[in-house]
Structure formats: structure tokens, C-alpha cells
Length: 132
Image (cartoon, rainbow, N blue to C red; front, top):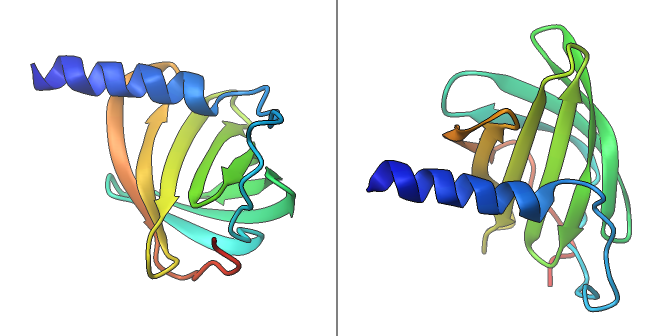
């Protein structure tokens, strides 16, 4: 039962955070400022260094983990953030997170082609500002 719930959750997340990432007219909540450099620490081991630019709710940037580079694209709305990192080897990591009351973020991640393998992540080295 837990496996089914995790797979369903991963599928829902997949559709919620994958491109086109376009914000629609109903998506007008101000977002926390998530721009800058921060480190994603995944519970399964990897640390991903990202540099994020933000234009309204749209976010983009670069990622690096263990010497492998990637491109980040997604969006931030209110206290929620969702993005995909496309790595040089064409694998894709999907990330969804919530910025909590202390303005730090934590969330879940999975590989796009393996949505049943869900791991947790957090950003302990960055406190986001301008949160609603």
C-alpha cells in the first residue's frame, strides 16, 4: 500500500513540476526570492550545487554535482518551489519543495525516468527572503 501511495505521489509531482513551467493568470501569488547560490543536500547522499536566477515565478539556472553539470528550470509560487534539472548525460531530476516558517526549504526528489524512487532533500545553507 505504501509503495502505491509513493508511486501515485511521484506521478502527481511529475505532472505538477515538469515543463512547460508557464505560470497562468491564476498563479499570481508572490514567490519567495529563491535566486542565488545554494546547496541541495539529498538524503540518499548527493549534494547538488545550484545557481538560480528568478524572473517572477520562473526560475532557471545551472547545477553541479560531483563534477557533472546540468540545467535547472522551474518555478516558485508563494512558498512552493518545483524544478527539473537536466544533466549532461540527459538524465533528469525532479524536485518539489516547500519553504517553511523559518524560510528554509525541504522537499522530495525523484529521477524523471524512475518516479517510484523518492528521496528527501533540504537546503540548509540558504534562508530565502521576501516570502509571503
